[in-house]
Length: 451
Image 1 (tube, rainbow, N blue to C red):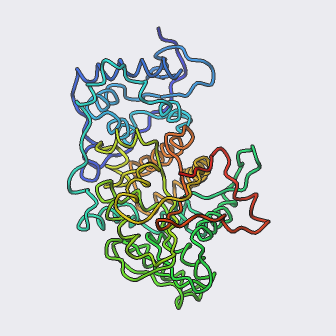
Image 2: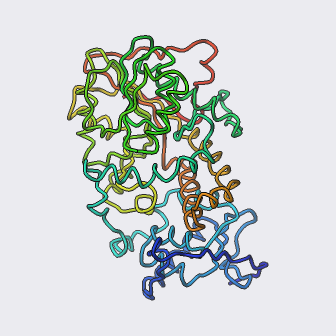
């Protein structure tokens, strides 16, 4: 049964086949497209989606306010999804085959219990389209710098368009009441980023005279904050553009005598440090190299030292199931990565080092808010993104990436943890906080976990 709605304008991004070969190419796989069509009907039914077709038709009735999947080129969409699964789904969006007036709502509906979208008896079909990550993107010492450069060396000006003045590209922590979600604005981001940084520095007990190693510099805000406490900081990055701007910001703040940024792989870290801090860098390490990562943390940590990590996480079973799957995010956004689980972090540290996980605090909903603000600012500043030389296929790719990530945190498919690791036998003490910050640091919608 179909009904009629006013037709929507069809986006037609110009796709450069040299820059976007797999987006420009529309496969011809009729049998797989037929399977994709059946799965689309199932998803629409199971999730209450409104699937709009060209000419004002609707695939099936849907309740008012239902998330909308607007198909502009159904054939291309079905053949891409039929051949490539979720990679094809993403490439189809980049090409303009489909759209949605509320991309996050649609992706949130699809990300809720995704395992139920495919009938149990037909899950063997997954083998037809699931790819393995290519060897050239494995996060070896030889490949990692290229992987990092594909994302973080795009343009400092690009990131400045949607980040706050701290240039922090990781989850912020917003002030919340006991049971109220934040209603944050972009103006709140800088303070929320400092709240996140300060909590990590408190976890690691960074203060005057602390020798601190940061793995993953970003654009230098955490190193600046630690130097402002009187710490002596060495920060490692593999992004040449981040290196340049972080050094400039540190020099401009008068902290060059306390904070040094090095172009260096984490595996080559040298020295002994009282504190090691790393924010959302473990996701780029890759599962085969987690033992090397934690061995490095253990090797450089001085006796009595503390490691504070901020990590995107996912449930352990989902992590295991997806660990050898090549996804759209890996192909286009973060090559070589793997999101860990808290359990995987704990087990890897325990098996390969003297480090033990002593504290894990969850802040997933804060990342959803952070991503919402980034996404809104990125979309608002689309003309400025174009002026930097990024075409519409790229802009649609990043809109999908930010919306996809936000949906992941809103459904709980993804979570965010701040983690404390100490040497075997050490015990955790309460995180030092001033009375004015205790309420600000309370997580909403999350929980504190103690392994």
